[in-house]
Amino acid sequence: MCWAHSRLEMSPDELVYLGILAASIPVGFLFRHLSPPIKQGAALLLGLTITIATCGIHTLHSLCTVLGTWLIITFNWRKAPSLSLGWTFLYLLFFRLATWFGLPPPGPFANAIQLLLTLKLVSLANEVHSYHSEKKKDVSSFSKSPVIGGLSHVPSFYDVISYSYCYIGIMTGPFFRYQTYADWLRQVDAASLPGREPCLLRLKMVPVYGALFLFVNYLFPLSLVRTEEFLEHSYFYRFFYMVVVFFVFRMRFYAAWCGAEAGCISAGLGCYPQGALSKPGGGPTVQYSPDPGAPVEYDFKTIQNIDCYNTDFCVKVRHGMRYWNMTVQWWLHHYIYPNAPFRAYALRAGWTMLISAYWHGVHAGYYLSFLTIPLCIAAETSMEASVRARLGPSGQKAFDWIHWFLKMRAYDYMCMGFVLLKASDTLNYWSSIYFIIHVIALLCILTGRVMGGGRRERKKVSEEEKEMGIKFTDHTEAIGPDP
Image 1 (cartoon, rainbow, N blue to C red):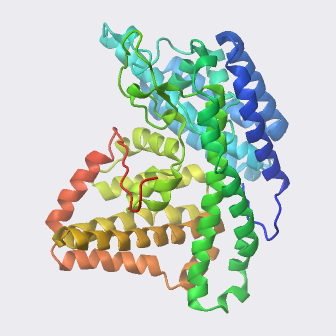
Image 2 (cartoon, helix red, strand yellow):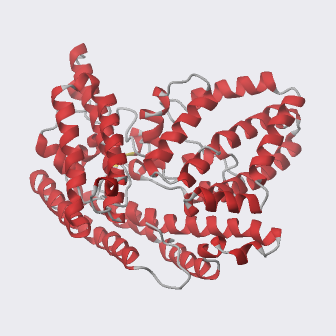
Image 3 (tube, rainbow, N blue to C red):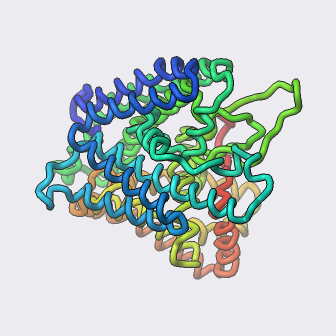
């Protein structure tokens, strides 16, 4: 899904993505008027149509993944979480190395569908495991909590296929759990739920993001970085280039994800009462029963995938991850981070980033970028414990501004690996700016050690471990005015 071009126009693949996103919004409003069985069948039919039309024979990859997962949850639910993770991730490897086996290479549409399907099926296996575990415990209130208590029954093969190929977000995201999908099917009077206003609110900045993406990408094409001519420019120009590349990268995904969220909103997917305290990806976290006759306010936090303001203006590297691809972050923090084979926070974070890199692809640039994140987190934790903790209010505010500036440059730096993909291209660029972020991170860690922040740092890490655990609480720490 490479959108980097040296011209002010869109590629055929981009136009297809845009067309699917645009069409999903008006179609979603029509789905609000359908009964549950018809809604389920129509969403499946539309999703399969999109898949077959864009992927052709490569649709068999996603179908094999679905069939394998269904067999796992049907015949071995006790080990379903680990088996499904192993099965889907091994199939991802086969999918990416298809040419090694004499098969035609899958296209970008098949890749996008396979990535999101992997998240869905692993989550489904965990939900089925939780259902059986709770049933075994014979919890009396189990069947009375359809929102937060998990599944009310084991999904049939038709249910699994319908969830897997539901047209909503099939290749653009966001990720949503099977429980969210089942709640969507069972919505009562869906046409009366909020739709038009929240949809327009989510779309209002999309033209701006799209225009900025096209214009800035035209002025600063990524292809220039791979040329010898690029190295002839001054150091500050080379350094500045990563800033604009990450800006283009953000505008691209801001436009795509806001549009994808609007497609969910129009269909009513992920619409829950505000009192349910929903989390992106996970859905409601508390049982909510409004008083009879009391007005109920709704939100779509369950399908929120991007917080553009906080992505740009939160202070810390670790917080920046939470506001970007939020539904996938929920998935990582629930199914990967808690099960990491390490206890130390830095190692668990590193393991999570390694799995995230593997999920994204086999290109070395992903691994170079994602595995730089734990180093940056260790650096900021060390400086917070050894420097910020000793400053007064005004000093801490100045520290936070510097921290924010370095956070943005760290993401600029890591983005280059994400878009250049090849290890040689990534390392060539990083070396052209003297591995500046790695050097700064190591100096920050060393400064923290020298200034005796070890004990405070260990306490800070302990607090972060709790913060980054299964609850995955939201944060709104940002600098500047409120959005």
